[in-house]
Each structure stands twice: as C-alpha cells, then as structure tokens.
Length: 347
Image (cartoon, rainbow, N blue to C red; front, side, top):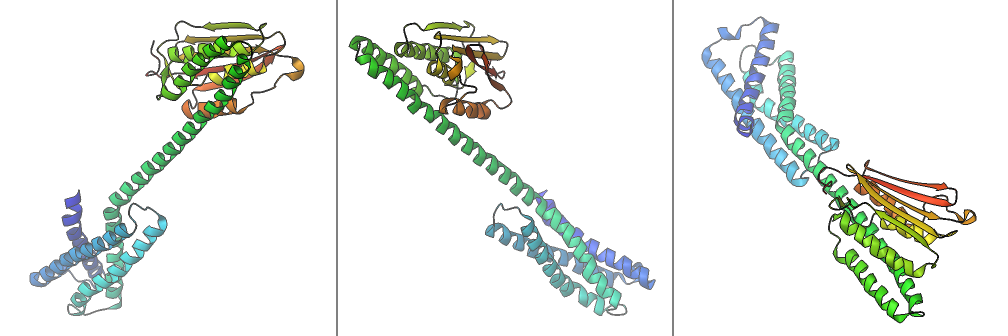
C-alpha cells in the first residue's frame, strides 16, 4: 500500500487532472482531443504526470513537517490547517505546470480554461490528501486511544493502591489498641496477640499479589477474628461458617475484612456476630451479621473501610458484584456477592 501511494497515486492524479480538463474543454468547444497531434497530447500528458509527482513530493514534505512539529496529534484544527496549505500548494503547482500548456496551445487561455485549471486539480488534491493522510491519522487516532487507556488504567491502579494502603493504618490502629489494653491484664496473652498481629501484617505487606486464593483470604479472616475476640466482651457469641469449597478461587485481597471489622465495631445488644461464606458455581456470597441496640443502630454502612470497599468493588468487579445492607429486628446484615470469571473460578 505504501508503494502504491508513493508511486502510482501521483501518476493517477496527473492523468485524472489532464483527462478531466481535456474532456470538459472538448465538451465546451466541440473539439476532439484525439484529433490533435499525438506529439502535443504526449507532451501534455507527460507534463501532467510530472506535475502529479511534483505535487506529491511537495505535499509529502509538507506533511512530514506537520508530523514532526506535532507528532501523533489528531485534531480538526490541524486538518483544517493542512487543507489550507494543500489549497496553496495546489494553486501554485497547478498554475506553474498547466498554465503554459493552456496559454500556448489551441485558442489560448479562456475564462473557462482558468476555472477548469484551478478547480478540478483542487478537487483531486483533496481526494489525494484524504488517501495519503488516512493511514497517518488512523494511526494517530489509535495511538491516542491506547495512550488514553494507559493513562486511565494507571490512574485506576494508583487509586487502587491508595485505597488498599488506607486499610493499613485503619487495621493498625485497631490491632495496636487491642494489644495495648491486653498488656494491662495478661502479658503472655499480649505476646500471643503480637505474634498473631505479625502474621496478619505479613499478609498485608508481603502477600499482596494481584489476586490471592480464597483459602488465604479465609485464613486471614480467621486470624483477624481471633485477634478481635481478645478486645470484645467475654459474652460475645460468635458463629463463623466458612464453606470448605472456598479454596482455590482467585479474588482480590482484603475485600471481606471491612465487613467483619464493621461487625466487631458496632456489635452490641446480646453481642452476637455471625460470619457466613459460601460458593455456588462461580458466585461467592459473604454475609456478616451483628446484633445491635436499636437506638444506636446504623442505618447504612459507614466508615472509611466500607467506603473504600465500595470503591474497590466498583474498580475491580464492575457489574460483577453487589453489596447490600439491611436491618432485621435487632440484627444488622451486610452481604457481598462476587461473580467470578472463568480464570478466577478454580477449586
């Protein structure tokens, strides 16, 4: 295609200009150009072809200048500017080559000759411009789309890292607060809590690959629950049911933590917390319920952890998740559903 545009199109441009002008002139004057001498026709045809190559060379130099000054920039203002220069180049080159042929042959330069010489080549020049520049602008358009997608993706990745990082100080504050009060009562138990805390922290710091298995995530939650049990009332009634089939499914880490953390934060009343996780097909359902005192019951999820969770779900599982909350009597429930893709659904 590159050779065709470079070597064939200019010749076709010159021939089309010549034969179109010739046919229009013959229609007006009644002349038949094939009755003219073949030497004269050959000179005119050769001159027109040379004009086509010269026009193509000048336009390529012009387009190279535009590409160098504003690479990969596609805009309507640029197209308008290039078309203006195409118009100027066309008027100069065409009149330079074609005017002598018209003036010194047949009946000289007439008004209709001037019109044909200046308008017809311009129309073909615009067509030539469209053919020559289509691939360049298509490539620039694709490059701009790729760049825009890369910038958008980088922005989303940065936002995800920021949201994920916010879990760390939130988690650290709660865990250290737990150990702080435990040290006043039992130093040995406090040491065990520090050990448990280090395991949780290690998971957050070192096991943050793109995705983790549900087995790892459930083990993390179990350790977190064990640590949280230390700081809550001894009358806490805890019911944790984790489906044994939750094993190799791949999920993004720390999605379930905010729901469990929120339950421990707001549990009151008869101090009951129920955690239930199961899988059915390619859907993971995670439900956390905690007892509440109606007067102090939250009506909707709140706190930085749950706000971040909703944003992370929107980014990581667009149109493949749901997060609902509801109050039933003296209990508050939060339910998350995740739809896994084929490559994530592995047992």
